[in-house]
Image (cartoon, rainbow, N blue to C red; front, top):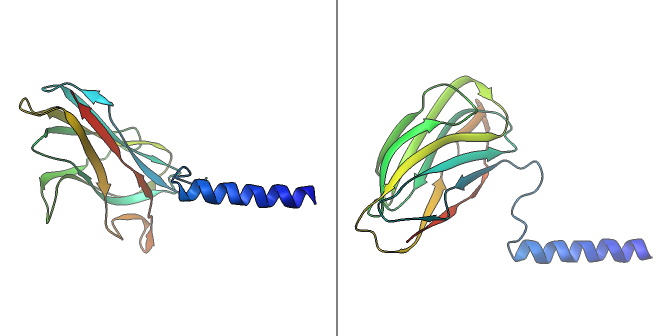
Length: 163
C-alpha cells in the first residue's frame, strides 16, 4: 500500500512540475541549447554558443539563430568541439525574422555532446538597456542523422541583458 501511494505521489508531482515547465527534458532526448553571457554592456563584444546534449549522431543540419539585428551586430562564426568541417554561414533577413543560419553536411554523423558552433556579436552603441532574445529555429528535416532519419531536438533558448 505504501509503495502504491509513493508511486501515485511521484506521478502527481511529476505532472505538476511538467505542467509548470520545470521539467524541460528527459534523459536521452536530444536538445539544442543556446548559452550567452547574462549581461553585456552597450558596445561590448560577446559570443553565443550553440550546444547539443544527448546527440544521437548528426550528419546534416540547418539551424537558424534568430536575434534582433538592430541590437546586435553579427561578427563571425567558428566551429565548436564536435567536428572540423567548415560551416556554411548566412547572416540575413529571412521571411519574417533575422538570423544567422549555420549549415553543415558530412557523410558520417558526428557523435557526442558539446558545442556545435559559436557566433560572435557586438552590441550596437545606440542600444537601449533591456533584455533581448536569442532563439534557435529549424524546420522538420533540417537536422538529420542518416538519410530518412530525422533528429528533432528540443531547444532551450536564452536572453541577454544589455546594460
